[in-house]
Length: 156
Image (cartoon, rainbow, N blue to C red; front, side, top):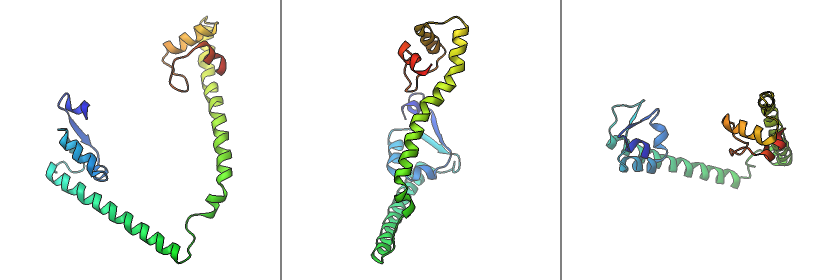
């Protein structure tokens, strides 16, 4: 909002219905003095948009209440809710997740290998020089930080 307010810019929203889901955000946007226009409804003024947002939020609450009531009624009638295979596959999902977590560093090291090889071909042999070259090229570490000799050693 500050980026729109400072230069007096107008926020362009592709679809107004995305904002209708959160009436509070829309009202805060209006209160903050940010001008906005929706590409799918450019003729809508702030009054119309505000009313539509409040109605959409009320409808969302009613849909939620009806869904919860229907699920409670189904459960009361003995209907088993959810997918049993999802419950029994929890351990399999955890195993797949752990396998993915161990593959991620290997994939990153594989992606970095040609870059490190190119840096070494340019004459940077010590790990500190390779780290400096990676930082100069704007390549972040896996967590978004700066490269150090220790981090280079871990991936090479």
